[in-house]
Image 1 (cartoon, rainbow, N blue to C red):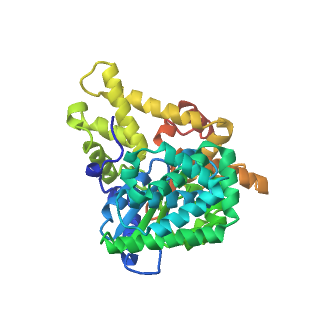
Image 2 (image 1 turned 135 degrees about the vertical axis):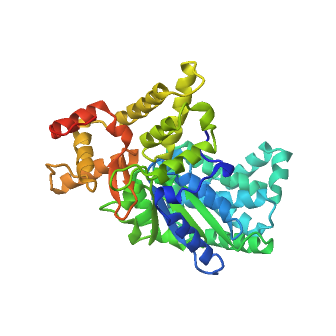
Image 3 (image 1 turned 90 degrees about the vertical axis):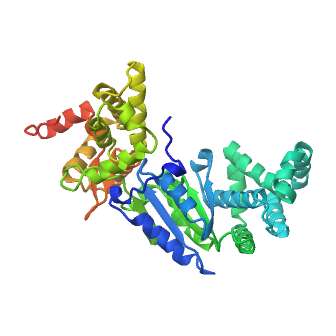
Length: 442
């Protein structure tokens, strides 16, 4: 299995992406790491497969001298309707669990106070729950978390309740929302003590909280989180780097109105603006593969590797899938090396996966064709410029961007293009041919 992120396999793709935004994020964080009361809130978005999680993991590993990084990823069950309450609960639980697990001397009074406060709001009878936990937990768990073992398990049980049941999740959110100001104050007291603890043990000057997976939130839910609850996120006394859906980076929504430091991570640039092949991008993807796979051993020629790289559209997730499926095709065919036939099978699989996303084709294909011909907009040729028509066009455009069928590439002027796997779909090529009969689509 070809793994996506390994610390020793990381490749800096800044040149391949034609973007230095990640360097800018690091510089901003480094400059603010010693400041006492200034806390950065930085957003990162990008298409599915652009490599956001990989880059966040690398950020976490590369900045551990200036910061103590706390990486958070909310449960997929919660992401469907995520709000700021969930983030605060996950943040408190992760902070208490990580510091206690490391045996770092965070003030037990502050930990117990905030845990008891959450327990009193989330359980009908917190004392009964505590007794249940005491009777269930063995000595190993107590030894692992020391004096903090009960707070850790209480907070974990609250998280489990929110994950397990939508009704319980809504009840907890509604209850805690009533005490928003008090809750934020208590969370900030914990964050202040966490930073003080780090200074006492010489583990960095500050906390860096990395909130991953928030780009998976549905667009409507994300607008509530990043627009209606922006003030709560800004009020947290810690540096935070968070992901957000790419739809909030596109018209008519502007997350930059609430978070001025927001960045879009582009795909690896496979083609230049003049549509010629970009060797820098191809070489970047090749190096990513070479860190994980002996290309000379498995491929008959480098041209096959280059062909797969072009077929990936610079999408790292699709790049890994193409490599994996080419290896699998060679094994199925009982071949020692990957040939053109194996690559074709892999590309066909990827195109088939995208074709399933482009339903109904009567609506999707005209939008795709519009983007292919203009490279800048996704209104259909016969656009309905009523309020509902504009809303529908933006909705379907959002769906295509989120799926990865449309890519935004960096350059002197950002522009859109279709994923090569979409262009390889026969029914779409036939549609495009019908729109421009004199142009040959192949």
